[in-house]
Image (tube, rainbow, N blue to C red):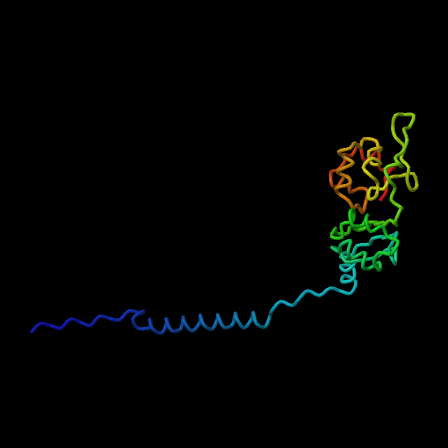
Length: 208
């Protein structure tokens, strides 16, 4: 009879393979559990501002505006950034019986957003000048405008009055009227209604 072949020796993996697999799975679950536990215990805390930083942030979100004329409580108000002219009118107690409601209805856009440092004037009845008050010719070929303080109001002047300003013709005068109300005279530049050269000529002749 022939000799039986010697049995083959088992490899390391055959002996410990299953043990290694289970050990690897166990390590994976342990590591995963530790990571989740770490994240749970170390959640990010909200950023807290000091009282000075918080107050400074609040001030940055406010705008200061001036409202005068036919309102119950004229004066300077601090209101939230993004507030509108309608909100400012409410803060000022609303219009008085003397207010020119026709001007308000035609000219004032209550939905306009207030800008910092803005001024709004509500005229009284009969205060807005008519076309007959257009200024006279100057000797140098320019025109002199008549109005409160010798200047023309961007918010109340008629088209003919605006046309008296140097460098402002009928087309520009109509654009000025169509873009009312104004809170700062610089808005003529910002809204590209007039160029820089024209603005330099008229900035001393205009008001709100």
